[in-house]
Image (cartoon, rainbow, N blue to C red; front, side, top):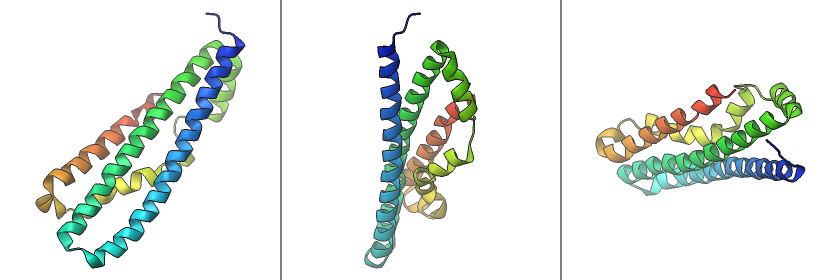
Length: 155
């Protein structure tokens, strides 16, 4: 397998672009979380309870979409890194020394993506008034949770 410096440079650029995208998604999640929080306090006074529940139950769908995008970028970035490790032994040592299977900081940085997806648990009564939306939120959260399996099976 012959890989030249240009290929390695392209892969490095790919990883850097995906890392930027990950941080942009997290920043967007923090911004949207703040906006939704302010809107929820404001709308709580203006909307009837059923409409407020609808608003609250739509929020996890937005964050599930962001999380799926985050996961896709992360998985692609790790696939490229895995390939680079196979052709560059120095990368293997560096990556192994700096990347553990599970890190608390990795979990904490994605909390802005995950926390809003737990909203249906605080609105259990919505199961009877908005069963389709409530169920959709729960299913999307379970898919997000399942999709993080790549973190566990990573070499």
